Image (cartoon, rainbow, N blue to C red; front, side):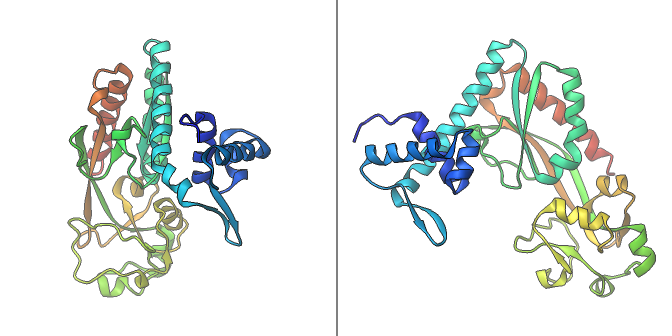
Length: 296
């Protein structure tokens, strides 16, 4: 086996591991499927062992392929980081900033905030990665992140910008049809929108009973889908105060049920000296602090 493996071939291996099939990986890499297949064949010849096996369940990575996974993820993140940093150097004060946030915050909260950032900083492009999984800022999967919990890594610069209030809400039409529950016993007779497999931590919530998935008439772990069902009048669900007010939703049992989420802006400490990173960090901190304050 050659000691040096071609990075182009390794990128194709990483794409297949991420996408789960040759066709999807080829689309990710903007290659034809035969070309990507040749990359995998060439790697297998160099390594002297198969990387994937075909089965009725689809393409299965071998232990050899899986052993490459963490290393290739690190290499891909480093390459993406280098590309963003090089773009910033080449364009002077411009460049790229990669921002990570949850699905709901990225769709419902950040668009207007990022539009104002772009207006003030037209030379800086923004990459927005949305996931409820926390991106690894130590590996630079993202440059700046909006998080709903205090970061634990010592290598991060973090600023708490405020506190979000969440509570039960419903549409005016639903309330007109079904009425407003006065307590938890009445609430359980309503069509509730909630979680499927992953119940969030309800910090500070005043709950006098366990919350289990069988309480919910609609179950999904996707926060955006929950909000869509809530706005469609499916039933009663939990929503941020600001988003509920914007959509004309009616608060339900706000005097007996409410919980809070801290909001933090984070970036890796090595980015302190980057003008564009600092601009984004400070812009998000200011704008999201105002957003949180508006929920009071």
